[in-house]
Image (cartoon, rainbow, N blue to C red; front, top):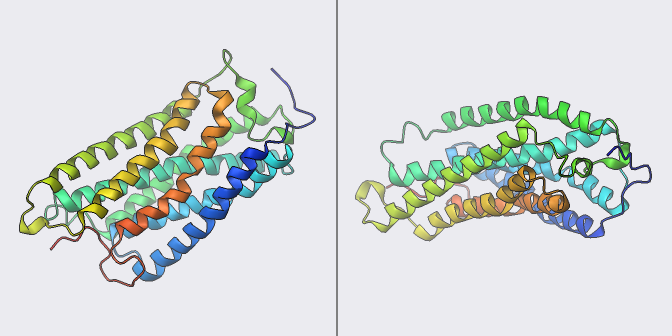
Length: 289
């Protein structure tokens, strides 16, 4: 179908309102969280390093939301095809980077609780910075072929087609790219790692911990893993399944659902860092004594 959508799409005020609410809530939450993380905790622990980068990833997504609000409110796209492509990339990159950073947080907590002594040489801010550097490099490399693919999808459509290009590939003509399979595999892998980490930590906390692995506030520790699983299963998994099954009719709703992760991530910072609102030299939670 080569419909150029000359007259734009029908305005979708519901999706405009949803994205507007996410913007209104997510922007101050992540901006304040990033400020607190940098000012009170710095980059002195692996947890803080991962959370700072998670907040940055969320803010990159949030700055693209005003254009989504405008598009769904008016049914038209006022900018260029290139701008549309970059905003779509910000969305996909947020899913990839957030899924990885959330998993890093779970693995770091796993090592702190289950292997507190043996993991000390691994759980350093230096190693965490190297890891996030590799993640951002990975995101940039994956974005290159994806950007080319999006440009090809949009080249036959005028500016009013932004965000609506999946509608042109409705089943049975839906084409699933290799990058879609790759992203879905990445999300599923990260979810599996989070499930394993949650299971091992839960099992460890149920035992009588020895003196080298005592953990303060077990409820907060488990809340970290619960939040990670909630974000992975509710925000990221449905979108991945929808893309694999060419769920075109529900794609807008899945996009909204995945975007909600930027409002849930700040809860991780509160539960993960001891004395989140206070300046503290060692911000790791749980604390090994």
